[in-house]
Image (cartoon, rainbow, N blue to C red; front, top):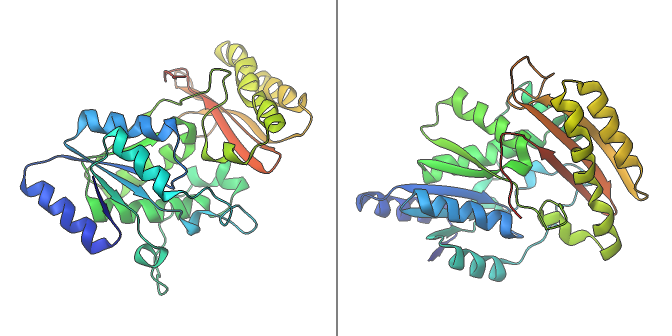
Length: 282
């Protein structure tokens, strides 16, 4: 496994792999790796000759007062995990290599990026799209892998790929959960033992809303998810929503319905969702 830190170096490594006839898969991450990330790497390894994993804490997707400085960073540990999971190239650039000081371009996906997470974190998806577009241009993968836990992010990036004509497939992989249902997240590292117990309420809320959504009563599903979230002391809900899984607007007749929740638990803001069409692992 090779570790590179510059745009020129990652382009050269990928160019060499292309010359050998290799297909390339990309797994963008911000580090703080857990089994959810590693499941993406293993999936990418099954479907490509070479897997490129980026580790980059992207400042553009953090708003004022968010956890940019506190976000988990442990490059040595992350690299060891990636080596074991089958990554071939790890791209670990400094901020100035990805976002020059005179950067004048931002990628924005309208509509999709303005609801739910976009409404609660203005500018977040602009930051995500801008850095991912740059990674696509640097690596030029056949496939890029993202997790279902960030379902809205995946939908926004899918639209960006379609609108800008990136010649690649976006592969969304199932949520990986702890045995008690808590979705794996780098931000779980912020939680104390008691807060971790409180965080399980996100999955309980989704489970409570699911039968109502399956019966077509989306308003009742949202109310029930919010009610369950509010039963746990120390949990501050941001939203509980039933939306179309592709547009993130109101559910459409015959469309896939996604249940999504977000809440602050202690120092961490956590998100979770259930998509009935996606299998999950634990």
